[in-house]
Image (cartoon, rainbow, N blue to C red; front, side, top):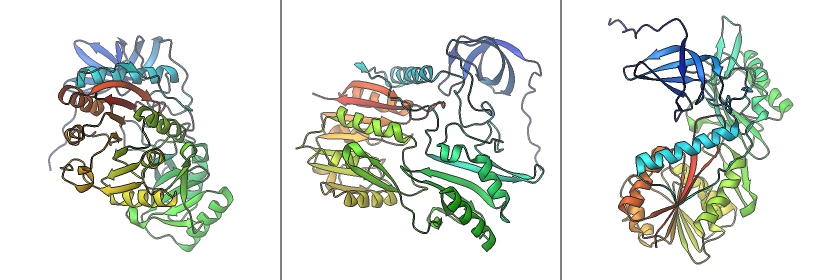
Length: 443
């Protein structure tokens, strides 16, 4: 049996460093002996003592221990396990400074990767900084040595579940109940067979999906149902894959959120994709509609449309809207949502947007404007096809500034578009995640 190779020995004593910059993932950047060190819990301009936790060939990683000179934007983290839990990276930084740092990340990516810059920088789109997260997956583990169940996110750099009693960024209906939920799982016969809890909060209800690795005994089921009744939470069980999710209590549960400005409602599944931050989503959709400047006689294409978050509002404004998504399940849900909202000027198609789409019949009919909201990989393969449509306006919503910058470079430098506007949206406060939006135009 091959022996596992050990990494280099780490210094046991704290080291002193001055932080030169902030990395894209929220760590302080220092340089010692000609080598870059990423220091968790440190901010630009600070002088800190830190301990090494990793040594790599090209860089090292450390954790701040003592702050000798604090940055003006440093604040006291609200969470008791900040720095241990892997869920947040920036609670020690003032929220306004966080969003400005994310704006800097976006602009640096656009310049460095895309070789572009916007004609106008949009003001950041912000919302509540705490209790905003309505979708999450929490780990669950019964620890026999502790005689208790742990529920929470993973620790930084470790596979262990963080020992936490509450989460400040989760919606309060769950974030303030972690101890209560741990005690509930601890009372079950199957306490060591519950692997995770998926959280989904709509406009009025909170649903929890328990991943049970074996069938539950009747007594466990009764315990869970009684808790659901008492707490007004909706409980689901998931004994297998995503298709196995079934309601436990109440027997009929439908999660739903609304965009009142456009008089549309969306049904979604507790394990399906929806926007994490409802407050930002309700600002983001009209923001995107205004930027796209949809007219009543136009045909609009919505790529990576999901369950229709942008498509249905577009259908209130345009002559016709076509939504395209790679997931058959999401497209079926989008069609049902359109029908439920009485929208007949919209159609949906399943297509792999990384492959040839320009030959598909609905694509050949042409479009006036395009909106796209891809996953982290971006839309590189689709960009040439979008450019050939010759649309005058493109709105690009992004969850990854690096791939947005790459695609912006293609649109501007290869296809003759102008990057009119770009800006960030604070979809995930206290994390290093950067959500952004950009407008491209062509005369």
